Image 1 (cartoon, rainbow, N blue to C red):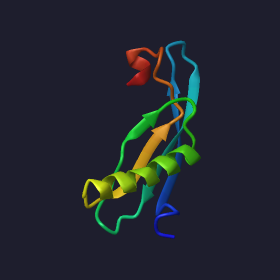
Image 2 (cartoon, rainbow, N blue to C red):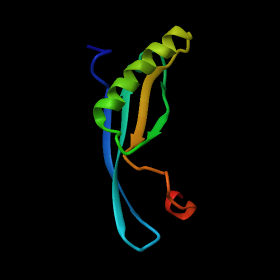
Image 3 (tube, helix red, strand yellow):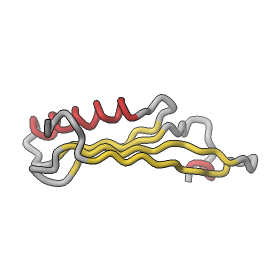
Image 4 (cartoon, rainbow, N blue to C red):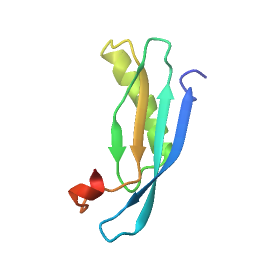
Length: 93
């Protein structure tokens, strides 16, 4: 069970204003697996198709990558359904 279910799942919304003045809302996620060996290690993914299921899989995969490279760290992954393609610098920042 320690590897199958994440220790922590955080789901949140991020409201932001686009260059036309409209308010947009994107979902954000953070999944953390197995901190028995150390802190969580994993990256971020920004893509319109990101959802909790994808990040759970990628976080689980990160546990295996960390253990195979002998890193004493748990697996984690974060992301958002925000698509940075075609956005201006002010919209991304």
